[in-house]
Length: 117
Image 1 (cartoon, rainbow, N blue to C red):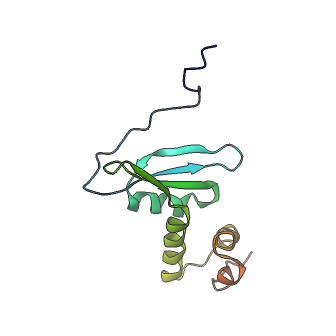
Image 2 (tube, rainbow, N blue to C red):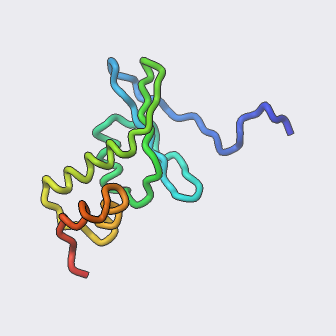
């Protein structure tokens, strides 16, 4: 086997045309074996995706294709999603509440209303 070939699970991610100094986001999902969820997304799209697919979220990586940099944006995007739920006075499901507790702690999660089981 040629060790210079990329691994079989490596795939090319289609890049969205970058805006001036705008970051693109890549969402990784799955807990045991993370996998790429979709393609590069803009900030609004990744926030929407996390709001809908929070249970499988493993990590969010922000890329600045123009600057050639990347960073971990998981906490930042999760905080935005949780803040929007709070602003919209969303009644959380048990899974949403547990996710908020995992991200922000039990005391913070207890400030949300939870759906009756």
